Picture (cartoon, helix red, strand yellow):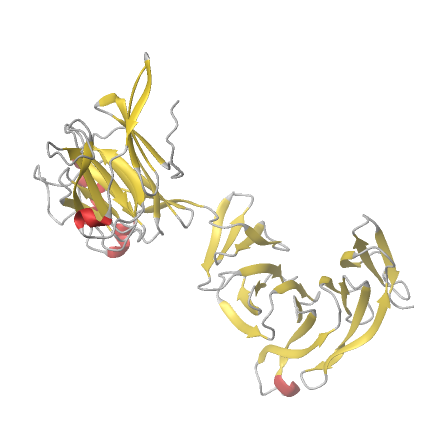
Length: 449
């Protein structure tokens, strides 16, 4: 071990494949070259580099590599530059002749971070923040480029172990082409992982494709690039919907363990999901108060509304899928109804706003409709203010607002944490709502008394 003596956290470690006793590491601002031996502690040096040396700004370092069959090394930066380090006989008083120093800076991708810099013989491979993978020779002259992957910022690149490619792999690149010159670009198949949690397979033959769609590679894996905030299961099919703050909405088939549908929301953060009981609709609530209704079959948008600027916290459909209740962080409940405007048969069926009410003093923690066993459609909410509120659904309109039927204090000291309709024994005078609290207790309330 050796103490670097700097606060620059080292984020990249590379061995010199042509001299295993040499290692390069770098942080954001410094590059260290190490030599080690089993009989002595590691020795290192760090060449200095300032903006005045090359009269340009030096961006933070990303990764460092050793260039084959030479004394040179290269470091990528977040500004799209490559710093070349080499031995120099020029005496500047800051370095020794047997130590590398910065000899030049090459601009590869202006203002685009070089996230990945690696050597794959006979190329230097660079993956950038704009989602491109480019191949250079050892003098950083571009040889091939894959700029249509469209999968997000490149985070890592991994090549197939066997680099031998058969000529047949390149058949069909061009109509009538039967042979290839020695100058044709060839490399092993490679996997690219990106900042959008995608893994894409790339092949050298894609470089010769004329259609941009054919140059995108093949998607191998699609993961989640941010924590999951919303989760909901389809009522009839083996499908589960997942959403997160990065804007993704995934629908997975949990029997086949495969991704079924994908939708991305630009500049929106989905956080709550709910399927309609008939399975035809998927409601999505967003952190800015938006509510969108999607077809569950293809995730196409049916309608969108925004009746609050605060995040959506709860979504709930009625048992007949004709009503949708929405709770927001501002302690308001909104109601929507699928009907004809003004009850006029000349209008098409659509989702209409039926009222809004700030019915709680503290945050809403539960929202539910009654089931089909109820004598009428009921809507309930429960809040941290210990109140259970029932709404008059049928009498609520956009003109009268969401009408409150009754409000009951249900706790003395404990805080409610949720509620749901209790479907058992729910006929006649025994229509019940189950609530639960932070003392791990359940309570059943008869809502007809």
